[in-house]
Length: 73
Image (cartoon, rainbow, N blue to C red; front, side):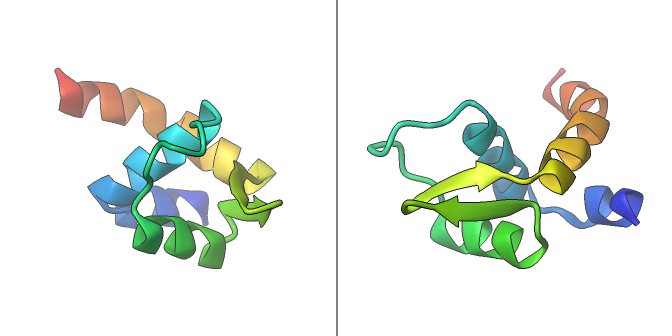
């Protein structure tokens, strides 16, 4: 199931997922649609108005990381 999610995330969603991982400061603007879609996929949650990774989101991010490095190269 996670492999399907890995393949279907947009670049904006990947960027938001990575930014959430490093606890982007409040001033850092994440694309609202991307964050909302990550919440809908249960990859992120909103806690005290701050997006945080869920265990499922952390797993997807770790699985997708090598592929993201290939894209960046």
